[in-house]
Image (cartoon, rainbow, N blue to C red; front, side, top):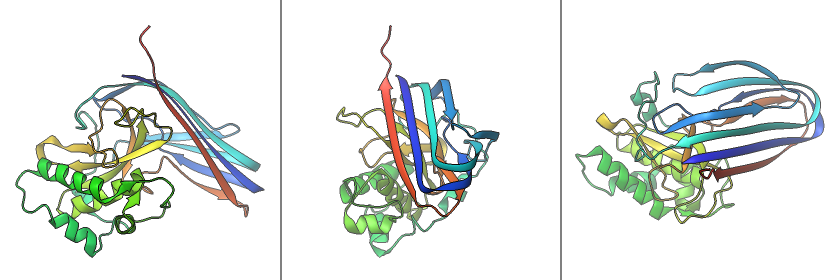
Length: 270
């Protein structure tokens, strides 16, 4: 599938900021399931710094902006060709050992309800089968409902609420997998459409679980499937904060407002 992506993030401040420093994890991953043909990151009036590939295989790019400024825009446009690998992350080069992803964070720390849910599948000798069952448990336990959770909502809180968005599904699945001694991590990216064919007009997130000889396998509990050709992978981390596509610090005392617009379209053959 050939996808055209546009993604614009606008930060507005009620008082001018003096300076801004950002770290952008906004470049598509390199692996067998996707190939980037064009990709442009723009920060109008910004100064592009050096970039590097981190231990997880993600490309990180630094930007700075000198104020005063009351609005900062991060704009991405690009073309990516994808294919279905049944969720398996083949050909992705990284240095971090999978066992590092057994470590919990505040967002994924389990409570008694998560521990009970993780053990409800019983004993499994097949790690892949267990991972699928854990993903199905999360899909059933948390109904997709935008606007009911916040960026700071934890896996335990989302499970107790029984509702949430893709971030909550990913955090809950990561928590369950780690409870069953399966390394798991959070993945940020894009989705062309949901399983029922409805357009997806936002950035997306899912989990990857390490399952022995297969390596990392993606699971999107929010949509009850493994990532296929509709998905574009950007980067990963221990949780949503660690894998955030945009991280930064603004110097100033103004209140920040955020607006995000994402468009993922299929390019039809000529």
